[in-house]
Image (cartoon, rainbow, N blue to C red):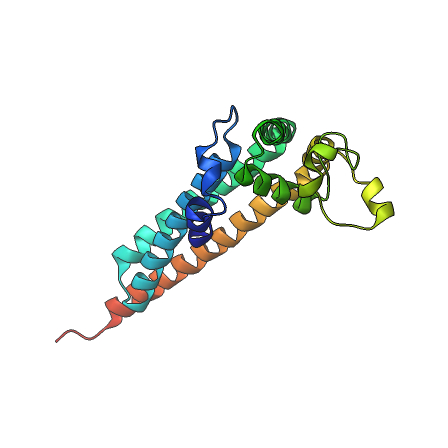
Amino acid sequence: MFGLGLWLRFSSETRGFFDIDLNTQQFVIGVSVLIALGAVILLVAVFGDYGACNENMNGLAVFSCLLAILAVVEIAAGVFAYMRSDEVGEQLAKFYMTVYAQYVDKGDPGLAVTLSMFHNLLHCCGLIGALDILVKKTCPETGIWETLTLPACPTVILNLFESKAPLVMGLFLGTAAMLITALVCCSILMKQIKKSHLSAPMY
């Protein structure tokens, strides 16, 4: 996750996104969150590995605290994403329309890459669907009949977040459940280490 965020931030193909003057900054914010979250998870893994391998109670305590914080954040993020799914969809649709307008105006290759990512990921094309000749080059390559039925991207984005909101929340809550499971395992390990230290013979 950390590596993916860094790649998106500094790759020659996506670096231009951070130089685009947009009213909405969802892509930049998303990548920044990805980098931050990846760094935190990497830090958690380091403390967990250090604490478990060396039977270090302090390392495991820090690991447990970080896990608890991450679990709470995951639950809060899942609930927020579910409750504000329409708002998230609207913001992403606005982001798409802003990129679309600037691409039509400037024809920038970086914007073309952004549109291509949207079009191929969501299987859509432009603001009016397959007949949108202004961004035809960035639309998915499909057969003749399928090309004519490609939907407009803003509609697809809005429908996606409205229909998949429970799934998004489920992903967050599922991740939180795994973190809580790891927290329980860590607590058991800490108790066992403490017990072994107390039962160790004194010299």
